[in-house]
Figure 1 (spheres, rainbow, N blue to C red):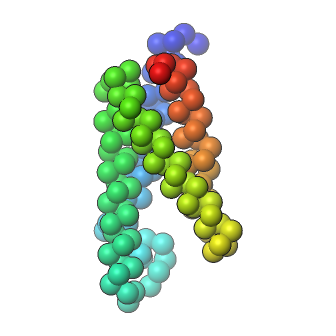
Figure 2 (tube, helix red, strand yellow; figure 1 turned 180 degrees about the vertical axis):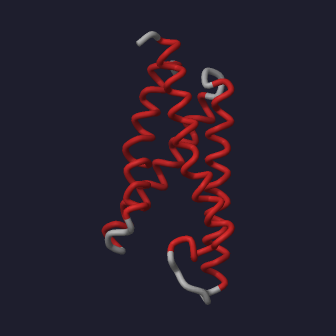
Length: 130
């Protein structure tokens, strides 16, 4: 596969993967903790915190998309997003041991955060350099 083909495939994958935080963020904003099956009423602090984090999740997905227009010149933004995602994955990993096994969707998130995103970041370094 040529370099331009790899760059195109890379951009397509990033665009597809960014759908996940956008969709989950929107669902969390609209549904609050109900998105995870928590039944109302819930404490106002839980709803507030959940929607705050959903807003961040949504924004991260949109910012991932904003890198697509020029992956070469958004290296810093792309890698900061990757770092934030990996840090979130590490926190989710801690939760796995402290709180127990989450739902399949959250396990998928863990795979994305600690597997797919680091691999995409390495691929980004290979395609676009430091």
